[in-house]
Every structure is written in structure tokens, then in C-alpha cells.
Image (cartoon, rainbow, N blue to C red):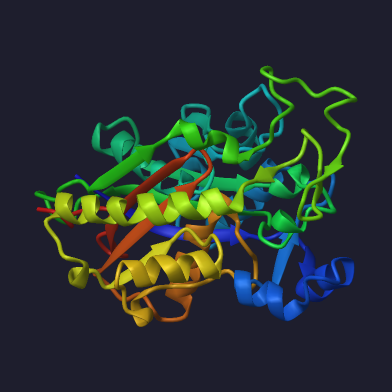
Length: 348
């Protein structure tokens, strides 16, 4: 039994924040500088009353409306989010009910950021190949904007809210289809470099934690807000991800020249260009897709895949490498054939 991606749809909130709007708020950061560093033109921002489940619902509804399957055919729901509606109940359970997925389906949340889509594919493959499920709905949904202080340009320029819904299902095209190769990595020592310090049980939110202070770069934030040490995140990425790619190639018995297309987590243009050059990946094989939505965390890879497919960059049975990396530190990579074979038969 093989495993295949059969459909991807995504949803972006209606409200947008353009570079022009940010430059008006931060005159020291002109539009050209923002675009040149990030590769982003605008980001979509959830309304105050709009939660990750709302974004995820809209993405899943688009997937079902595409005709690829119906809610009644889903037997497992995986939701990747770091901004759940509640500490409890599990947001995936709420989405099961709202989407009309059968009560016989499993549903769970998992808390990962920019590596979450790759991890979700690994979980879906495991569920299907062990006959625990045959059709898995993988939803990635994030509203990082709710963590961001409005006067913190270091992260406001980067992150946008979004959700993606991906159908992963069993496939019996080739009896000897091998599982897709995956490699993962974790280094919790870097956890403090991308963090919301207060709000959990380790450091509960208090009136004091909500008091914002200004840093040496003119960014305002409180302990309740998202903090990112951009320099350390950059160093981690340039150190860990090339080795991750090499480990994946070794596991799949491939060379980098064998890969037809590369879709990395869409962090920012500056970082991605450094990675591409360090790995000697030709520009025409390396996909950038963040100008219209920014860094959408766990949804950035499926959104990029959807656009690459729509724009004719992905052809049947092309070998595609996916690489996710970020908060945690957490990273992961996999190879798939697009789209008729999906996650199968790339490393026999």
C-alpha cells in the first residue's frame, strides 16, 4: 500500500497589511527595504474574532468543494497549530464536528511550527501504512498575528495568518511501493530564540507580563508577545538544514541533481537564497512563493505546492523535496513524487 497527496487547498484571511502600510508606521523601514529583505509584498491577518479553527474550516471546506473527497470519507483529522482555540478541548475535535467528519474518525492536534507540514505528512503516512486510516485530512492553521506586538517590526514584516488543508490517502498503484523517506531533527536548546515567553503554565500571563518594553532596535514587545532572535534563527538554519538535506539524500540513495523541484519552508527570501546557494540548487528548481502572504508557518509549504502546481511548475512523477524548519528548534524533510504517486516509491 502506498500513500499519496490527492489535494491541497488553502485559505487566507481577508485583511491584508502591505509594505506601504508598514512603511508608514515604521518610516525607517521603506517599502523597498522590506521587500528586498523578506521578498514579501503583503500579509493576511486574521480578525480579532477569527481563530485558527475558522481558517482551518475554510481551507477544508475548499478542499471538499473541489470534489476530491467528502467529509464522510475522512477517517483521521490531524491539525497542526501553535495557536489553538483553547488549551482544551482539542481544536481538531471541534473541527471534526464543524466539518461533518464521521464520529468514527480519529482527531488530534499537534503543536509544531514551520516544520509541521513535513511532520504531518510523516504522521499521515504512518497512520495509513499501519492500516489505522485510509484518508487523512491534514490541516495546518496559524494565527501568529495574535502573538505579535503592533510596534514590533522585526516580526510584523514577516508573518501572515493562513490555513491549508491537504488530503493524504492510501494508494494501491504499485504493490511494492516503499514508504517515503523522512529525516527529522530537534534541538530544544534553541527554544528561547523563537518564543512567546508568557501565557502557558510555566510562566502564566499577569498584568506585569503584558507590559511592553522597547529593545535596542526600537521594537516593542511584552512577555505575552512573540519574540524572535533573527540572527540566531538564521545561524541555526544555515547550520542544520544543509545537513538535513544531505541525510535525506543519503537515506533515499539520491544525489541533489536527481531532485526535480525543491519546496522549502517559506521563511523569508534572504534566508532561502542563502540556503539555495549553500546547497548549490539551481534557481529554476527552487520555489519562492511568499510575496502574497508572507511567512505562514506550517502552511507555507502546502501553499507553495499549490501555487507551483497551478503555475505548471510541477509535473507528474517529478521528484520533489520538502524541507521544513523553525521554532523549537525543529526540522524535517521528505521526498515525494508529484502527484500521481504522492508519498510512495521514491526510495526503493
